[in-house]
Image 1 (cartoon, rainbow, N blue to C red):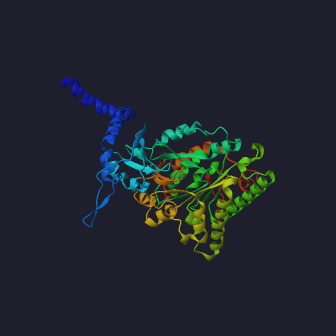
Image 2 (cartoon, rainbow, N blue to C red):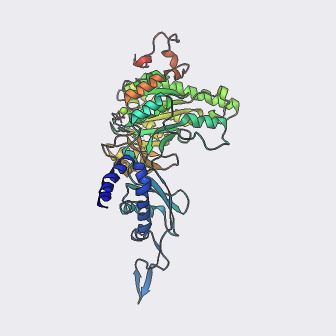
Length: 465
Ligand SMILES: Nc1ncnc2c1ncn2[C@@H]1O[C@H](COP(=O)(O)OP(=O)(O)OP(=O)(O)O)[C@@H](O)[C@H]1O
Ligand SMILES: [Mg+2]
């Protein structure tokens, strides 16, 4: 008996270490299930989630007495099926209750159930859903090497069905295939998908070294094998986006070039508007496949460099840039032009157009911030409750961000750690997929309309003029 017990003591931790998933389903989840069931009544009572059958106040001898009800009704709780290291549960709210009360109790629940976190949402009227994460799923994101290797062979990273709706038009199916970008993991263990059909434009903020470019790398690596034109504006001299030159249709590395690229893209959008108008459709995706133009994803790294000009000579260019970005954001959504804009700050000090631009960038991603203002600027107007969460991201949590979810809420997420070298290698492998944009790309195609590329435009092979 003793020997068997000793063997178990040795073997069980090993099993736990080597097969964490099996351990979760076989041991941790049943224990958690029991703990939740066992503690729910007391927890609901202690956290004021119970309502009374009786009145909570009464008159005794002319004195009004208020107190905790003695006959509490506890919200009913249903447990969902377990997922890897997490489980969801739903509770039916009682009359007079709001989801906020459950949100306030989330920390107490996490402690009582000894889990990493409990997130509360309200997917249906009268119901709250708890996403219970047993461990921090963002602590270990898929190893970048595996991701890069798999990409290298053209296989998708995550197997997610393109669309579940069978009645969608061919255009909608194509849009789903091209515009859903898997960039990392969400806190609930699901893939982190930037769905450009739902949120066409994204603002990515964060202090220096917080993971903005790494997220951009993950997005570009996903887009590289697809028939999508990638255009870059990187006024840090092409230091960041220059890695993808082989796959970019155009890269502007100084402000005059950026003005030119943006002006050209606005023209492209206006042309597409006419094309849709003639065809009698309201979106580029409703055009027949033979004449449907390719979607364009514009990547901007460091918005401040683009829009902030101290020299009066540059001010007109900076204004032109922010105005054209706003126009692209306004018009581009249904015409296949999408923006991914990264920057350390997005305040009004960057110029009059930037606040307007921020309003147009519906998708928000906020990494670790250096000051509360940046978190407020990125998330405050849409998710005031996410500002605190963004501020609590620590310096060691590189790549962790608060992101808009496709359901319209927010969640913690972590990008896949795709370094510059990997991004460069993979984009070079997909150089043959580079989309030629007449009027932009021909500057540096051999035999193109110009002998020399204009200043500030990238050359194939990573050079810039
Ligand atoms: N998802 C991640 N997982 C692990 N490490 C990450 C992740 N994202 C970023 N890092 C680490 O953080 C470092 C800085 O990331 P990155 O260059 O993307 O920051 P940045 O916000 O673009 O900084 P800057 O504003 O200076 O350009 C990277 O070298 C990488 O090692
Ligand atoms: Mg960067």
